[in-house]
Image (cartoon, rainbow, N blue to C red; front, side, top):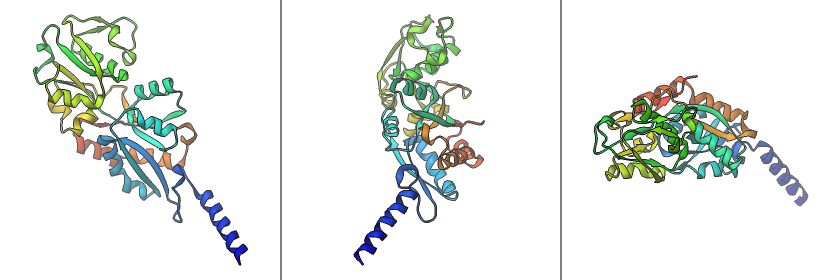
Amino acid sequence: MKKSLLFGAILTLGLSLTLAACGNDSANESDETTIKIGASNVPHAEILEFTKPLLEKEGVKLDITTYNDYVVPNVALDEGDLDANYFQHIPFFNSAVNENDFDFVNAGAIHIEPLGLYSKKYENLSDLKDGATVLVSNSQSDWGRIISILADEGLVTLKEGVEPTTATFDDIDENPKNLEFEYENDPALMTTLYQQEEGDLVAINSNFAVDQDINPLEDSIALESTSSPYANIVAVRSEDAKDPAILKLIEVLKSKEVQDYIMEEWDGAVVPVKD
């Protein structure tokens, strides 16, 4: 009798291990799979919450962990605590992979969050005084975005041959208004600096803006074009790139239902990527 019970326990354990899927806690008797995914609070986690019931119809559950940080989600993915993350744009992803030797792939581009320039002191960029201070986050992958906005407004020019997506402030050629750039603060702090009326101009990522009820379309004095190369993506480890659950996640995130939700919910402050 004891031997039979032991054999049964071993068999049950073996079956459990065989059924394990993404995240090692996924599949059950109904063949459901759970994806552990990390995301920024807004809009990423909200988009995923909307996606949840659509995915469950396809046999995939989402276990969402939110982060207010640009470093931890990639570390968690690399260490296996997450199966995917959804918080970063392509240049940031490329930089993180190169610097940390992460074995990640871009599973799919989902939306764009136009970066905006905000001011409590000026209504137009053309009104900026000589020597105005521009507060920028310490996320270097965003610097080229800010420079491009300023260049489009005729406030700076880039040195010849510099790729805008990798540009730094040292690559500025002409700066007729002698704009001063300060870039010591974390991206999540930029909304606070803006609300405290620090600096003359503050660059804020749209996910942090909308999280603080700041409307990029109404409150910014300059906004990045939605045709920018800074699409936000779902990142996964290379070994999971073709996992059926991951492929289903991307398929649903790119569906018309989710794209319509993004447009209706954020009214252009967040824009879906259309392949």
